[in-house]
Image 1 (cartoon, rainbow, N blue to C red):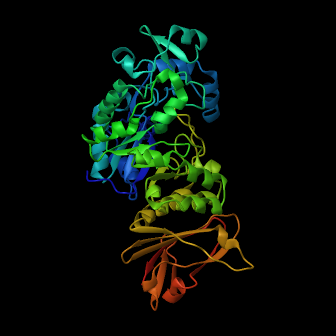
Image 2: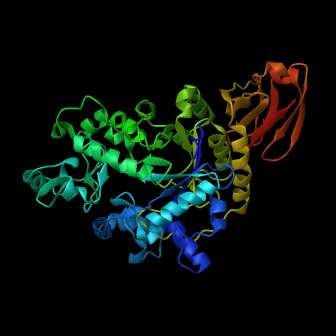
Image 3: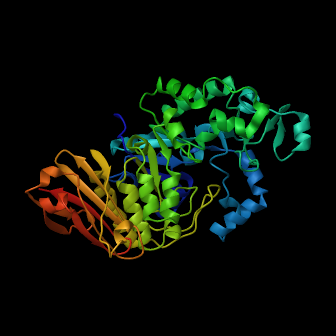
Length: 489
């Protein structure tokens, strides 16, 4: 396909669970290679640029055995799925045995068919890569041990929970600097030349099967983070960082491969500088869920080039469901916000229907939940509206109020300008009514009559251009309500 859109809309699907539910619905085994066309039509709907099929690679049988013995994991499984059975536990999709599409999901042929079906509908395919660790039965433990972080017999004796022995080697278990080692994965060595070469090979292979790659916990491979995690054990820090070495060499084979980083700890900008197209905007997520309009507005004052390289989201497989954390109308206000800001937008399968249970990625089945028809209808309007809005130049706007009414501080507002096409978004991000004025940045409206059409409600408002550019559009919004306005002169 052609070059990626600058601000793609990505739809994440838990592939194993999704195919299992489709198999039940159609009363036959469904794989990626034989999905009904109507399913692809629904997934690649207008307003969606890419589908992230999470969890397509071969899961590790060795990792599954470890998970089956882990009681704390089982507690989280039962909390999400009260009628849990052993058959429901499939192992972690981030404990990868091999970067080959799992035969249970349709294998490489089925994955190729899925990509073609998406392309026929104008959508692209994103797949995962886990750069920090592999499964304990991954071929590299035998074939390329220099890719992994090795220890000594004394390490294993002193810290049996942090090391394991395989094929005569002592390997460290995977971890990040803030948590205990993960018991089901083995640590890769970001400072190893062998790993860098192997990573290039693997990502090049993924680039032959997909249009983009989402790199799990990408910041763990950065020189300073990796050294902080492992200290002197990993030796001297390489002159060149991991991602600036890897990404250009992969792009030599796949110039249009999109790189998306799962990123935390305010490392989005350094990762953008190191070659990633988009990085998770966890800071905005936290402010939308836990804080107020002033806090969100402060985040939106960041440099525009930086914001265009972020991924805005309200949920993904690692976060709680939006319907559970953003009750009632607040979820809709937050959805309008992430959908109409610069940068990539990430939606999660089940989010539009109001699912509330966050399913551990180890599970192959989720509990039934009733769909919220009103919420689904809202998103059916929002996605195509946002696709129309986000074109041209974006600008954060300043709302004004009156001495005896400061509720304008709860209004978030921005504009999009694409030649004669103008859009204005205003969100009351509070639990009380808000009023204010929103001056627009379009001086050519002076002396003209203007009509504003709300793309979410089809309501229209006739206003004078002098008012819009002078004191500004008067806005009165109920709690958590929004305007997504298209302007016509």
